[in-house]
Figure 1 (cartoon, rainbow, N blue to C red):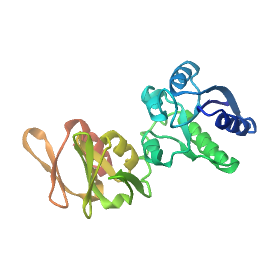
Figure 2: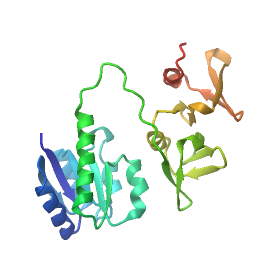
Figure 3: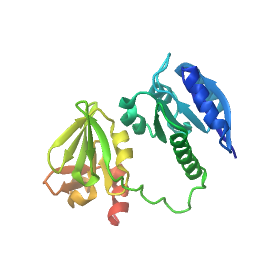
Figure 4: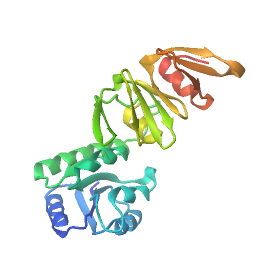
Length: 247
């Protein structure tokens, strides 16, 4: 099955370059091109491409705004192709498959296409009868704080707590406040080693000291630093999958 592909870029030369790269690849079908974000939203909704090469800065709306207009469950594979390095963290927050920084060569383009093929193969595989294995724990996590890019190892993160329109990363040493959503940071942390204990808190499993019963059949998660967090009833089963405990 060919990969039905859409190019979205306001620069004709950039579209020409991508078009040339795509035509040299077997198993790829170019179904259209757009020169603005607003055109892209309509084209993606109507044509339902498998893959979109998406510029970040365009007339009408930028690449992130294009994605915001599309239901997350029905989004195609996205490869951002842009001259702006500063949007890389934002791109991966919305689960982009890759981020091509212009000017890129054929080798880098082919690397991105290989990642797309692997991504589409995984998404097209029939769901397993058993529950899926937890997502792999990332080697490192990149966050943007106070204009800086900060590189963290997962084991440095004790817990994450929501704070209005921000989240606070409580680290083994210190803390960082990020303009993130809990959903976005949860996706980036993965489920191997981290668990959401309530609507406002994600914790590293190795940092949990104990789980205490509290009133009315509820539970409290006690961290190694003494912090106590309520365990949401709706999320209790998720924690039990990781701890191997039964109610």
